[in-house]
Length: 553
Image 1: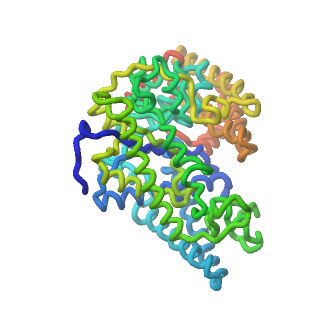
Image 2 (image 1 turned 120 degrees about the vertical axis):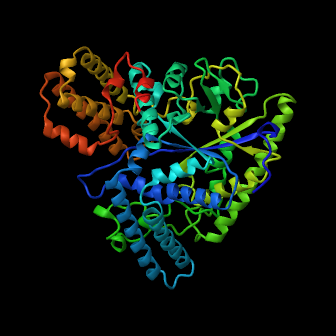
């Protein structure tokens, strides 16, 4: 343990924030769905290692602080028994594959240590997941949060890019209200903070964020830099918006130092190369039992380091990779100390101590950047030991001791390419919004009609159909679909999911309007798209309030 100085004495603060999200992918009628592996890979590479890191820090009595947002769709998949069982089978397959790789590489001094490492990793992950966490990652994250070291926050229900939905505010209310309610129902307390999906903000969102009960949210840097009036301390002090909600902005320097694969730490030649996976390197016949349907895909076993820009790669050396993570962690903490000292001089004596908000996608750590978890642990340890020069904090801890009085209305912004909406609203994907916004208007009309006709909405089957229509609309609104279409990454799957949910929604709407619901079809949708079992369609009503649905818990 290190000497704890008071928050008022701290020369500056470092708020590390990770955002954990995956789209809702679940296919009960199909034993293997390639896209379900997104969850399994993230569990193995990021989420379970993060929990293990938290546990070790707590056991070592490290006085750390950080913030983690868990999207509602990710929470739902954590809790899904079908996915839990399939994940265990996935780990069993990986363990068997690693055993075969140890035998295949028995005379290869470069690859055998790596095959052994993966075998240990998969077995220990299976043991942690099954025996220690008992497949209940929600309880594990709740326990860490209750230690006071990690602040858990929420996001919108299905991670919709909210600025694109503002012409139908009822959908924004539903996204924010359901996200807040689901978090509270899962963890037994309200989330104080909100991760705006894709950091997507527009001024019209401000009152809706406050209405949903969020005390604070996060923005991309230019959301504050271009705010009105411009904040006195730029992005290094939170501001209070007209609705009374507090906004923190991502630090530009911290983003480039860590996020960039070119100029940032993850691009170092000694780190493991994510893309050189045996799923693509080996003869498919050798992997016949591990490539379902014969599709080449990532297995998680990777034997090469980044090396350089050439396609000729050198074998990965575990010790060198982990050593670089230690060096880069020390460099990062040194830079944050220097940054805080420089900001103190820039703003002058008597100004609020600067806050550096270092916010990242959680899957960068462990998944994309194999050594990222080791790097993060060392950053937390070194930062906790450097309280005379910087102090780790969470937004809730900071706000508890530092009233925010700087008024500002942030500007339109996101963390997407070019900083605005081009990633999610572009010539390749903007066609989706005429369908999403039409469905949103229809959903609001149905909710209002049901409210005005109690005899109609008193039918249990009609209510079930309305609730399922709400689920289908929410799933169609996910920001992941336009992102994948724009980046041509699983674009056909994204388009299929989006159009499928819209078609399901419209079929339900026709049946509800006619008063003749096909119960068998409804039951199939309720099984396949089982997200948010207690969803209440009435939140889509134009006169509804997201907060009133949260308060029913």
